[in-house]
Length: 254
Image (cartoon, rainbow, N blue to C red; front, side, top):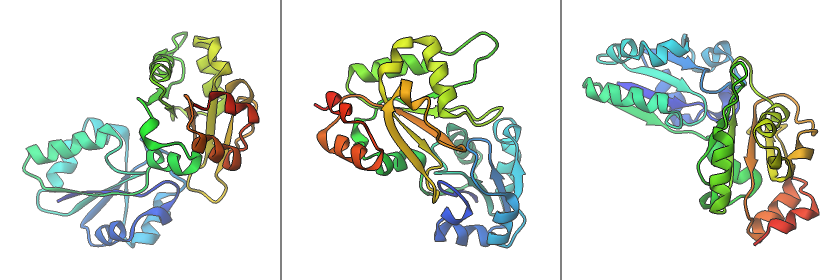
């Protein structure tokens, strides 16, 4: 069986008891740190589980996944995944591949930044639209995809989650805003919420217009950015209390 186990938001302590039990009872364990950068190490995971953990590279997931699937035909093989296992399309594709090869699979869910954002910001989960990724420029080319998604979501009153590129290094919020401004200077006036190190003891959350959020010191990654649309008054109140939002945020309350 192929078993996908989510390791949660921050470090190895976020894995569920069910996930830990399956990992301890498995025949072989892999971990991938490509789709996210958890605050843990292979060594810490090995100490927690009591077994060797093999680190997967991107090519192992995207080009050589069939090798892992084949191993799971007659053994219990675990893939440890940051956050919730099926948020990344890479993992859902591997699960489909396994099923088509006659290999049974199981998913042990865990906390994800996608759901944690609601608790951190107080934003209503049904008010989010399509998400996007702010990517590092490729030469002189800057992807305008996140700007197009923001505009589309704004037109229907939906908030936008912006994931920040991880390669070659985890992007910070100030860099992400700078990239967005290169595409459309008007975004500087939008309100956003920056989040750093979600799930950790020193999680930082701050709400401001992007032009001011760009200057705020969020500290070390991982960072994520939410662009706000019109707010419900309860969202406004939560952001005022827990994200130090400015009073002028009230101007976008319905």
